Length: 113
Ligand SMILES: [Zn+2]
Ligand SMILES: [Zn+2]
Image 1 (tube, rainbow, N blue to C red):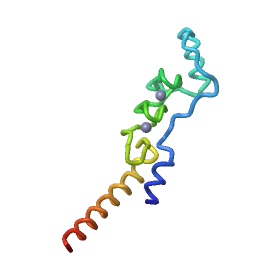
Image 2: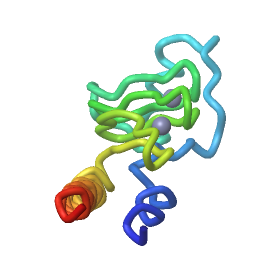
Image 3: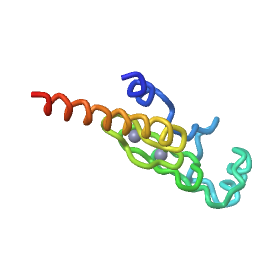
């Protein structure tokens, strides 16, 4: 249960909102200036129309979390959180191991009866 709650409350890699909201009516030059202002120099960064912010490559928007998640894998309903860059390795493995142990436990109980 501990790792379950840890995964639920930990940050999967939420893309932080910029200090200033971006004005999409700006022309290209202003957009480039805004990108530099936000420290964004990687051209592979894209703009999320829902968050109205820049996001790094491989980041995807989660409609359930209403946030962009870095290296988003999927939204996991088990932990009610996104599985992304920061929590996919540790917590997903922990959950899988627990599920496996639980399965062995249930099988053992069933076999005893
Ligand atoms: Zn987004
Ligand atoms: Zn999500």
